[in-house]
Amino acid sequence: MDELLARLERVMYGLNYATTFRLLPLPAGTSLKGAEAAIVGVYPKAELTGPTHADAATVWEEIGYAFDYRGDIAHGSGLELTDDQEIELRELQDRYRDYVRGFIGPESTIYTGGCRGLPGYPVFWGFCFLLLNADREGLLLFGDASD
Image (cartoon, rainbow, N blue to C red; front, top):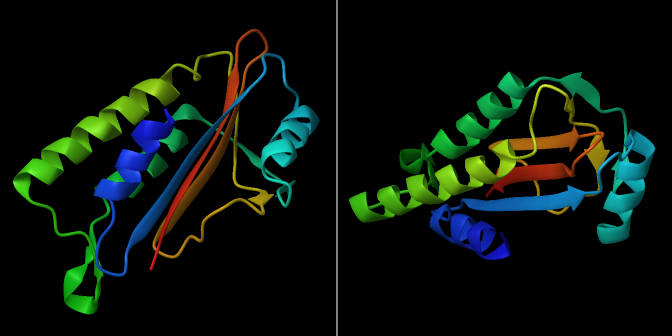
């Protein structure tokens, strides 16, 4: 997955425009408190600050917005992709969605926002989700775009 994220960030890099994408698997049965401990183990400055419940539709909507955003080149920021780069980007985005889809089910508890101290700086867009599952791995996923 690290290679996929690096390629996604590379293709989604443009004029005054850079992205950050991170995925952190969490053990099955992780509680919100346990998720915070696992996150802090990787990102020592991280802190959960009131995540709120969300649903799968919100996850896909926010990821979709991030993936579709191309900026505004006329005003000094964004992506200008060739047709080949656009095809590569769509393939990478589909692989990302497939991976995340494996952590979302009817039994999943989904939280959005409420996590400070993670790498990145959201200027144009940003998302952060916790996907927790009682009997299979969960996932922290976040991404943003800055100038």
